[in-house]
Length: 521
Image (cartoon, rainbow, N blue to C red; front, top):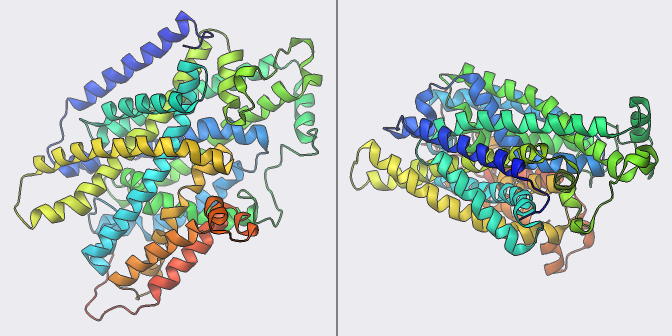
């Protein structure tokens, strides 16, 4: 155990788990009788609950740990990525959400089944499962970093593995019985907890820095390395900078279209609303609320820069040197601060915020991946043989949830080594792993929306091409194959652009069969 934690800290953490257990028990009392209820909440969820769940899912541990890391290392340009999110939300609300509701879809990949057939639907669902395994596994790894430091005072491999297993068990418990209804309401509670914790840290940092506001602002504007850490819009024409404006208006728009409209993890929440109007309202609210949330976490990192790197402003009050427990690991700067600088009680509260952000990610991944496995794969296979009642598919969803949990746990272990090999910042790493699946899915769905072309075989080929184009740009593949080093310089946002273009051209290269119908809205 970390000796810096007091009995008060552990009491707060214990109270959180008691609250989480009580919430899980209460939500599980209303058992889902069919898959419509288990995976979509019977389309009776309020838009604001869905909106907060979307926000909690998309932000979560990646923002709680990665946002301060981004602010500590860089500037405010990550906040500007919300421009890409707004543009993406407008596109998804106008072109995709109405189609999903018109066909009463349980998963967004049923749209491809209507257009190209069951094989295309399963292929897209399979690519989503691969992508979500990567994305949720990376977020579980980030949460494990925090929990590992709390429990063991280090981020060694064995500690990360143990912490990841604990987090997965907690997420599984919250999700198992109540389905998506449990996920949405627990997301609301988790969101409130981790936002309150972040506000507490920001306030505590502000009062701990003895400099006045003008001095802090001036120090951020003129950092020792010549960087303006208050810069919001990065207008450099730099293809290696993922948060430059040219990247935000291209690759980050595509990334958010994939997240809001093609990723079952997020779009499933939009489909729990009563109709398309409520679903789009939930999407818009989540995007707007995300702006101050991202600003909050990046601002924590900005003040951490003052606290640790500007002794000229901290004066005699600073004992803010990175101790040996930090071991040069920049990725744990926020957790290092929590464990070593915060007073008793507050330390436990903020740690609960980290765990809450992580659980929000885990339970959403479990439910959405389970819904795709059951609705797009298992149900069609089972109904060709017999017609069991709906309770059978609810139980199948619970079983698949256990398998998904095991997969996410194993992926989080892999991410421990993956992130260290690439030496990417946490936020960059969490976003970059989503590109593998999104490239092919975006190319295929753009073909559906903007053309009358494509076939089952071209859908399958496009999904594979999008994945491979992304894979060939990864640093470990470049080193392994011996490709030119400049292949590694493109930011993940541009990798997504190239992968999407290649997938779109592949899918649209084949004319649609004459018998192939198109969904009307």
